Length: 165
Image (cartoon, rainbow, N blue to C red):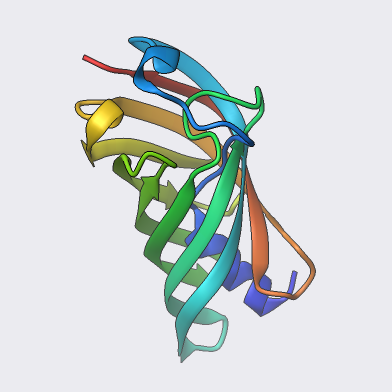
């Protein structure tokens, strides 16, 4: 995998989700499960070569998501994410944050992390939310998939679950 792809992937930890309809509070219920995908683009990246085979990257990313069911949690939402990634001997480790905004303007924020690669990452939406997402707690796993050496990537998510108080 090319360096630019590794860099983009490491930052995107961010995540993946749903498709065409925005969810309203009644559609979400008090708890639910989800899976889906997000397409992300690197808005900016600052790469520091610390040593041979050791990079440190700070990046900012944006994208949109789809939910596998075509509706529900994180369906047709906009993502704004940032994070840091360290790549040692080709293995990325990263941490960052995302804020997701739906078509109603409601938002939820959380943290992502990838350790020992990009195939088994975690995302937690637990920092704060507005509107229908107020008080929501959510967790999902995700994997990053690069689109050639374009700097763009998809994030595929699974095992997603949420609760609303």
